[in-house]
Length: 324
Image (cartoon, one colour):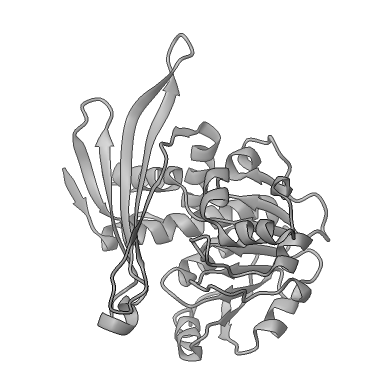
């Protein structure tokens, strides 16, 4: 059994290679048991924490065409403690990934799931952008400057000709620090305090926050923009308003995740802004060609992601096999 730490994951993964890995995984499919989502009440005025368990099993067809498991299976355990930063100066999210063999059931590797999650989440967003963002998208707005933001910028820039990125964060100094981390790169990354003005000029807007109120408004969107929303992982959270969702062609990573946890989708349905059938396709249908992605240069597209176990398993296998 191997222990694979964050630095090793960082060394073994790259964009757009991981985007390609996820594309193949969504095309091939996996056995994905239901995700376990457990609330953890902490008391003392602290916000409720969350514990997520996400299993997946690779699948293949035998000679008779029956679906059988193999050769890998895995499960991610993730904890989300929203007040960690202010209370103890630690990240809000911690996790580990358990990769096992379907031949023997033995544990092959334990991986740092915090870093793995950052890599695969951004890769899934970039995969959606391959099908939904305009081919000439060059201006990006990054809403949020947390641990995931840098990965999202690099992932999107690996599949679209992004040249300029504006970063907005509730705490402006965090946006400045993120922009500074790209000094010397081919990208021009700058902090901004005017979110509306930035969004109005954007070709691609990516949001990664834990906001409970809309940050990006539909009235700000120009024709042809693609919006990628990966924060707001609970039904009570949202990063976009009803107008944005109703103006868009809507896509999700998985239907189960979107209709179970995605506040941006669920709250828009509850308010009557959209009907459930306005969600056109998930990533598997996009990648498999079952449903079309972007069809016109002027249409607005919206991709909502809450995470899928297929993404974790594919990324873990990629890291593991790179070291074999």
